[in-house]
Image (cartoon, rainbow, N blue to C red; front, side, top):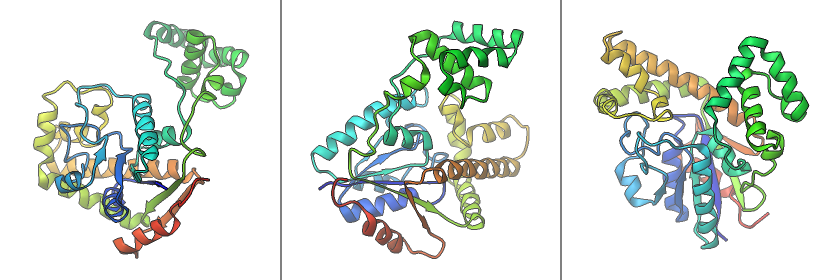
Length: 305
């Protein structure tokens, strides 16, 4: 029986190395669930797995689109869901690895079929909020979708829920019920990798230092020559190094800013993943790579649920 093993966690916890070593041991293919590894042109600032890993083990969704392309979580879900199901039917073992919580959640729990954005409608709703206040829109949402209204506390979510309702005639809470993920259908086990905070921050700081030594500044220079998509612009390193290139601060300050923003990102990742009680956590502080692999293989699924 083929297996599906998720390896998740914050940045710099060694997910890529663990996935690679595990895939070698159990003869698996790797499916990335990292929204920044999709891009061809960005390697250093995204910590793309080294070439030898990509050649030795089949990786999916790594370096497959341009930074100029728009790519949504729904695009990923649609393609990855189909691929995972196909590999499972062929009895090919899979390791799904990444730190993008929304992408992992989409695979596990599904995501409702895309309702596009309507710029004119959104502008209308935003203007209505400015004129009549957030509460006005909130009361309107309560009338059409009380379930979503109970959870929608900020204006952005209220507007999105109203946008979905007006475009489809169906409440957002109902659309979400259409989501269809992998959890409960396939034999899945989810492992989270973690270090104590001090050690994690040390690893993040070293990773950023290594990026600069490897040529992160030159890579960002080249990326800035392209028309970056909205999602690619969010790669940590682009904004920080851009400030240095514009002369706003020196290279050491750029480095420290990148370290700080990466640490903050890691906090958000951990908060997201800690909320998912399906994840079995492996605290790596005193474990060797072999120990981690043993932890995973001893708890991996052997049959369907």
